[in-house]
Image 1 (cartoon, rainbow, N blue to C red):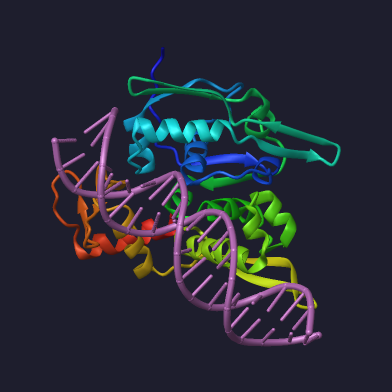
Image 2 (cartoon, rainbow, N blue to C red):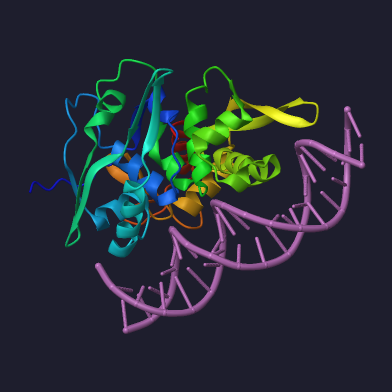
Length: 283
DNA sequence: GCAGAAGTACTCCGTCCGTC
DNA sequence: GACGGACGGAGTACTTCTGC
């Protein structure tokens, strides 16, 4: 079996149809899918078998999954197909993966071939997402809503019927009640998206009498200031390689100071300022 | 008064983390 | 990598509030 570790790539693309598919997954299930989507390349003609170690997966996602966790997660994932609405007269119900194997620490899997039109050789509307933004979010609904809104970030807003959004997210019965839905889904999603992603959202409720029937998400570029950005890096990526400058890797200490990974010496004040501005601009 | 939103408290279960 | 306990998020149901 050819072994190929996970790449350091963080970007993936999905078609509009796939982003808007109806499915309900928990955090780890979504993270597994989105992590493996970063291994799908634009020029790929077909899906490959992805072979990697559990340690490699944990390294890329900053998780600490055990083989037991993975087993639970994959079993759950394989029992939750997604529903793709290609058009009004054309829908597909399919699993994300055709198989998932774990053997002595080595994981092997392959996306289901039915997903090819939605992940390979994409010509229609698609969404590019940065795995780092999505992995940081704590709510599974935040991850889904982020992808749904990312597609419309250039337009600046997206309106959903409340019921339509609940259907796409496949929320349980108790979250069909708007107050529960707002508190457990919308507000939590806004909090995570504002804090961790490249967009910021505002919620506008459209009512018929007293009933909220539509929600408009107003989408803005997240201009999180440098101070907050440094705080996020301190919290989420302490002592990890951030970027290479002049052949040397730069890291951030848990105190928020940038240092050279090789020598452990702090950057000069001037270099640190330039480096933070570079990281902030390219976040 | 009624319908729907808002708020709160509770349970359950998955995830995380420390230990081995 | 496995295990067990702690913790927090998800889900649920109930009461209170608000506006038509």
